[in-house]
Structure formats: structure tokens, C-alpha cells
Length: 159
Image (cartoon, rainbow, N blue to C red; front, side):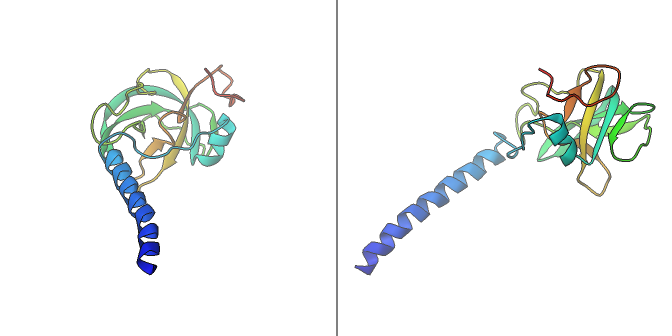
């Protein structure tokens, strides 16, 4: 009787292990990096970011490995532009990593790199490593086109 109960308990446990292993395998094969938070408003993203600043994207300056893939690195200028969170330091050559949408394999930006268009944007950044590299907090909500020249944070995500 006890062995029947043990078998009943072990079968779901074994299935759970198989599902977990296959999910981890697909993540490692480049299907997804991680579950990114979704922020209802730009204000919510501002609260989670370490540094939020208006910036002019100058040019792409290389790559940096992030989550197992080569992510694009850009030089941005924040000099004289509004800082919405963090130290008010005007940078003329701040290096920012564009967080990839996919990891390890294939195009890291299948929906397009949000920093590839060289324009004025609001950046929601985090600083995760000891090297001091800044990167966008998520692939989809780390870059917000400016809605005007006043440098204020819009109430909603721009469509």
C-alpha cells in the first residue's frame, strides 16, 4: 500500500522536474533571457531604475556580453539635459548597454534595438556590475522617446 502512495507522489514530482529542465534548456538556447517586469507607467519604471536621464544617443561604440549574448553598447550625451533620478552629472560620453531581448543565439534584438535610432530619449538605467556599466532596465521599457523638449516624464508609455 505504501509503495502505491509513493508512486502516486513521485509521478507528479518527476513530471515537474522534466518541465523545469526543459524550460531551463530553452532559456539557455536563446528563446528568452528572463521574465522582465512590466511597468504600468514610466513613473513605475523610474522608481525601479538607478538612474533616469534624458540623453542624446550619439553612436554605437561596440558590444558587451550580457546574459550570454553580445549586446550593443552606445555612447550617449546627457550634458545639459534633465536628470529625473540619480546624480546630476552631465556626461558627454556615457556608455550604455542596450539590454537584449534574447540571450545566447540568434538576433539579440528581434523587435529592433531601441537605441539604434540616434535621437533624444529618456533612459531608465541600472548599474549591475562592478565595472560601472549602465544598461537599460528592460529590453522593452528601458528607452522612452521624449514627448517634448521640457524634459518631464510622461504619465503613460508613448505608443
